[in-house]
Each structure stands twice: as C-alpha cells, then as structure tokens.
Amino acid sequence: MVVLRKGILPILFAVVISFAGTRLVACAGPVWPSDDEQRFLEAYRDHVGDTATRDQYDRADKLFVEAVQVLSDTYVENVDRPTFVKTAITSLETLETEDHTPIGVVGAALDDSLHDLDPHSAYMSDEMFRRLQESTEGSFAGVGIVISQDEDKQIRIVSPIDDTPAARAGLQPNDRITHIDGHDMKGEPISEAVRLMRGRIGDAVTLTVLRKEDSFDVTVKRARIEVPSVTASIIDNDLAYIRVSRFDASTLDQTREYLGMLNDKIGGTPRGLIVDLRRNPGGLLDSAADIADQFLSDGLIVATEGRGERKMRSYEADRSEYFKGVPMAVLLDRGSASGAELMAAALRENGRGVIIGERSFGKGSMQRIMPLTAGGGLKITTGYYTTPENHIVQGNGVVPDIEIKLEDEEDFGREVDLEHALPPRRRDPRRVLASMKAASCERDINVTRIGKAATNDAPAETEGDEVVTELQRDTVLECAVGYFGDGQLAVYRDQVEPLLRAGL
Image (tube, rainbow, N blue to C red):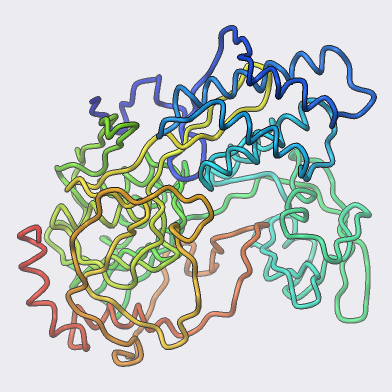
C-alpha cells in the first residue's frame, strides 16, 4: 500500500480530473479481438451509416477491443468478458444515439454495457472529457447565470452572477431564455442549454429573452466564470460557520482563505465551529482529503481498496490544525455524497467532530478516467473508499450522531436505490445516539456573512442542471447552533463529546 502525502503527490497520481475522486490513467499498446469480441465487431456494422470509411471502422474496432481489455484489467470486481461482450451485442438493437458513425455506435454500446455494471461507469467522448475537466477546475467559459426549468418547460434565469457578461448585459431574475443562437429551447433539458451557452472565451452567443411580454435578443461574449465552492459566516457573534458545496481544484484555497478570515474576525476562540457539507455531491478526492486535513494534525483521513479487498492508497493528515480544541459539528444530509461523506467520517473517527443531520447518500466507490488510444475513454469504477476505522461508505452512507428529522421530508433515492448499484461491503456499526424533529429546536440566529458571501449568495450550481429553490428557514442549522448553547441539542453535548473523544 502506498501512503500519499498531500501536496507532494507522485506525478503518476497527480492528474485528478473528475467527479467523485476519479483519476486519469493512460492506456496504450496493441489489442487483438477474441472470438466473442469479433462477433461484436461484425454485429455493430449493421447499425452504422452508409458513409462510414475503412479508417473509421478500424478506429472503432480498436476502441472496443481496447476498452474491454482495460475493463477486464482494472474494474473493481472480476468481469466476465464473454458476458460483457454479449451484453454489448444485445444493446445494439435498442441504442439511443444520433451518431451513426462507427465510433458513435461503438461508444453508445460501450456506455450502455458499462451502465449495466454500475451506475458510475461510462464511456466518455472527447467532448465529455473536456466538460469534465471544466467541472473540476471550479471555473468554465460561459455567460455567468444560474438557471432552472419552470413548470412550462422554459429555461428561467434564477440570477446572473455579479461581474459576469450576463450581469453586464442586464439579464435579470425570472427572464426566460426562449432561444440560444436561434435554437428553440422550449422543452429542451437544462443540459442542452448549458452546452449551447458554454464555449470558447471571447466567442459570442445570442440569447433570445422573454421578459414579461417583451421578447428581445441579447448578444454576450463568453468569459471565464469563477464558481465559488465555499462560503462562510459568523453566527451569533462567536460561532464560526463554513459551508463547502463541492470539492474542486480551487476549494482548498477558498477554504483556507475563509478559515483565516473567521479566525481574524471572531477575535478569540469561537464557541464552536460548524462545517456544513449538506447537498455536497463530492468531487476531487485530493481536495476532500486536503480540506479534512485543515482540521487534523495527524491520523488517517481515507484509504482506497480495490479488487479482492486489496489495499491501494491512503491519505494521512500532516498539516496544522485550524481552531484546535474548538468543538465542531459537521452537517450532513441525504444529498451529501462521496468526498463529503469521507470528510465527515474522517473528522468523527479522528475524534474531531460530531455529525448532525441525516444519513448520507452512500456513494463510496472510486472511478478512474482512462483515455483510449482510439479516442475517448472510459470512466471505470476501480475501488472503494475506506474510512479511518476501515468502514466502507458504499451503499451504507454515514450515520449521524444526532439525527434531525424534517417535517417536509420527501422521497429521495440513495446510492443503493440506483439501478445496478454496487453492493455494500463492511459497514460502520454506529447507531444514531439521539433523534429529534427539526421544528423542536427552532431558534432565531444572527448570521453575518463574510468575504464574497457578504454581497453575493454564490450559487452552488451555475449554468447547471440543478433547480434552485427559494431560501427557507434552515432549522437544521438552527439545531446545530443550539448544540453549542442552550438549545434542545445542548442536553446531548455532554453525552456525545466524551464518546467522540474516545473514538466510539
């Protein structure tokens, strides 16, 4: 097993580019089809357009054979190659693709077959690689708006981001985008609107906007849009609050900046520290481990486990600890996944913080991005994450110490509810120590935003596919504030803290 020291990672593992801790691994070398694979190569030709060339067929043949070899060598579980190829042949009859080139058909068949293994493995085209790279950099080339889709299936502007082309062009909340460069957007998914609005920096895009009864065109030039992933506040003058909405390449720097500001502005030892990881879907594994390390001076943060429970890598804490000795609460909910779950587990299992909220999503598998010499590449599940106490989050989630039940709780599927989800392995034997309704600990709190958050509500999703809702009273946060004072949860503090320090 290799122990990685964050910040001095070996170059071999330095390129981390995708959602949920995915890593980039290059693949090369000659590949030859087996008899089963040859049957696929013959079968897919019946689904290709008439204009395909010999070179296109050769490239697609190589793509499929190489992909099957890579999958066989690296997937987290043993793959029966003949069965996988048979599934790919069967999928040809029901492919949903508009690209009938050889690469288009083979890529679609691979994608369908990989989804049959687990919901996170997939085939990725070159364009998908580019967009994935953008999503982990914390910035992208676009116009700078937060959008949603309304009940009439129209693209609605929730808000323009300050100091972006959209804001300077005068776009306003509740404007409807009816066309993008002439493309009718009525009924189109948000992902299509995102695709059309993004592009190269400096290139212009024309938006047809409906504002009340008036329709007009706005032409804006795309620019580099920075999307913050961290916000912070001071609550009731002496509680430090920091929210991390995802883990990308810029999250660590933002976190350090805000932690420094909190330390300076509170001007003494805070009464408590709240780290909010609710609705955080994860991101880069290195980023999540690095941010956990800001609160730990030593100890294991996370490890990875591959096929046959073989230990692969581990991440150890090695930094100075912010707010050392200050009581900490970590907020989780059912939307907290992957890196957010690992960070919360690391803080609790190292005796650093109590978890308040809901059991998390349970996405504890690791994917690697593997470029193929024939073009595109595979996103393949290659391992499981393990916590400091060797528990596995996959399928289990992280159980809170103190559970907060929401009155308006709605149905929400977790990882185990996804089709073809990988089965759980070892789970954390912990149980909820206390449970209560959120409404029972409502309290008025004074929230003072700091930094950029003081003037901008910094959305978590920008030109993305998340429907943004109106702000409501945050009763879970109010419960957490009460934990550090005289609220309903304060009665549990003296019981939970000793257990936390003892690692129970």
